Length: 189
Image 1 (cartoon, rainbow, N blue to C red):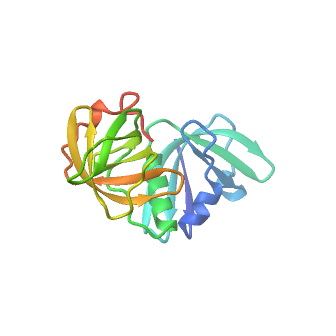
Image 2: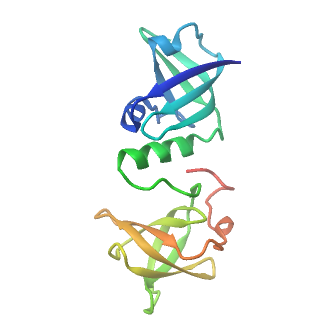
């Protein structure tokens, strides 16, 4: 299997050529990187990001060749979520995620620590380290929060909140039974 080496000076450069419309993501390769490739070729793509000083090796399939560029689609479960998380974190100057995220679809009750957990929110994503949820009442960043999730009480801290009604919560413990919360068996987000 042929290996194609692609080097980006920054994460923003990589994010500009990432193709998220494919089920498992992909990249637009320039003419030089795509040279000699044919549609339906299976290849290994070694993606380097200079600002991170990291390389990611992903299996991909060539899905399109057109004037001056090649589109490759990543195969399922190749770690593309780690690539995207690292690139996004680097481009937004925030710490890289420590845990893989999974889609979640569960209602949870939450509230400020020490208070009632009577506000209902909806989980969007969950990992061993935290969750993303939507709700009508957002707590400000830095707030301590208690959640009732699948019968378990979980404590954490709000790390970010948006005006669109989403907030990210970092769990105080990594013993949260996330397998009870995922929408489909460990479908990666």
